[in-house]
Structures are given as structure tokens and as C-alpha cells.
Length: 365
Image 1 (cartoon, rainbow, N blue to C red):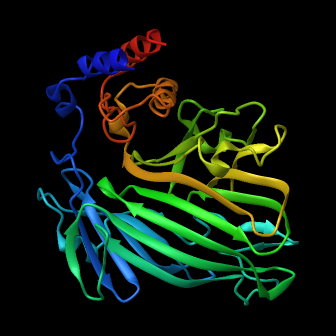
Image 2 (cartoon, one colour):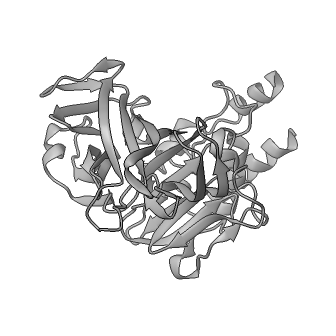
């Protein structure tokens, strides 16, 4: 590992090379601007030289659950985030009008997320409480401040579809917002009853206007038109980690699952079942399929959403190269001192450079 670390540090692309190909501001660490008004929290960071990126946390979907309700860009050519970005939307990237982190299909019906009961009115879930923490300190109502990290912690109750007044499971979701408003998600379900779960999706997409999709460790290693994208099985692609969606203007959203933790290992899916689904203009990570869950069981997963411009992937970079690079980055030998090629932020070099670096990395194995 020390030899690997030293070598990778020597392979770091010069700042000039990166500066010539990306338009990010010069900040290396997030400098978030956060504002709380009642139960609505807005958080912004620089997206690039032209825009701020803003995430709005508020209660939404049919069940009025606390989550990230909208992600958008607001024009701002200044070096620092502008509070005015909270009040206007120039480009909408993500709108939570449907599920974003997934409901559960259990005991005969969908519960949680955007799904109501069979009467089309009664909620199948509720937010019991939520907490907003800026660098570990709770945000007060009306407060506006800068911080490095925003954490939103939400406690929900999801009810039994067969007996809608009875809780079936408790849901805890921790959203951690960092640089360029990337959102880390850590979700846990604790089942209060023995339950048959027919289906559970983890990370879902509500990306606006997607035209193309690629998958990390999946069937579509390069950007593929959405009309050609179909579900694929765990048997065929057991190392599926995530997906990247791209709209016509070149803006992208990634949803990458931690496949070394909890449900992300895909142990709750049989080999012949789908591990990825694309349906109704949405991408789905499948985490549970046809499993019996004992009372008292806690099941968890972690993942990360990010938004970026396709130019950050490199002008001629084939996504199969990026897939190999991501697979390396996610391996357990990575240390804080190693080269930092994040596909969404730093991999802004041409395809020959990427291929060379991948070849050199793989030669170390």
C-alpha cells in the first residue's frame, strides 16, 4: 500500500491540466450557505463559475415526508454563494414529485415514499420528527449561516398496508450535504412485525429531462439513450454500483450505492432477479426482492447523489474507462493520501490520459 500511495501521488495531473478543462470555482472544501425557515431548509454551494447549486429540504410527496424536495441551479457569477440564489430557479435538476429513496412493497401494497393507501387518500407513512445540524450545531428557525456540512436527520413511521393504523417499521434517514451539495444518504429500517417484503427500492431518481444513462458496473458502461435501457439481473451484473443520468443540456445526476455496506451488498436479491430497473422515466436500485423479514430486524444502506456537468467527465472519455476507475476508487485499499479522481468532480481530462492512468493503476495489482 505505501508503494501504491506514493506512485499515485506522482501520477497526479497538474493543476494547469485540470484548470484547462473544468469550470469549478477554486475552493477545495465546501462553503455551504444554509437558511432555515420553519421546517424548510435551503442549502447552497458553488456549482461552477456561472451557477450556484441549491437543495431544498421540506416535506413533500403524497405522504408529506421530510426529504430533499428540489435541486436546482441559480445564476451567480460571483466567487461565493449568493443568498439571492434561494429565491430564483434557472435550471431545475431534480424535483421530488415521486419517490426518491424508495417505498416498500410489503403485505400486499406499497407503503412509504409517494404511496398512499387503497382509498387514494390515507397516508402510509409520516414524518415523526427531524433535525437540522450545521457543522454539528442545530439550526434555529430563521438562522442563515455558512458551514462545511449540513446534516438532516429524519425519523419516519411506515404503516402496515393490511392494517393502516398499525406501524410496520420505523425509518431513520440521515442526509449529509457536502461540496457542491452532493447528498450522502444513510437509511435504516427497523421492522416491528414479521413481514414478507416483495420489493424494496433504495436510491431512485427524480432527475429532470434525462436523455441518456450509463451504469457503473452494469449493462450500460457508456451513455445510452433511455429508450434502449432495460432492466438487468444480479446474475449478469453482480457488481452493479450505480448509474449516471444525462439530460439534453449535458447536466448529469449520479446515484452511487455503497456496495460494501448493508443492503448495498445485494445479498437480499437472488441471482436471477433484477438488480437495476429503468421504468417510467426513473432509475431504480433494487435492494430486496421476495424475502421474509423477522420482527426486530434492522436493515440499512448508504449511497450518494451528485449533480455535475458532463464536461467534468472529460471531453472524449468513454464511460467504460470511468467505470474501471470508479471500481478502483471504491476498493478497500484507498487511503486519504491517494490520488483523488472523483468521476463527478475531478476526472476532467481527455480519454488518453484516463486510459493511461487506468492502465498504470491496474498494473499495480
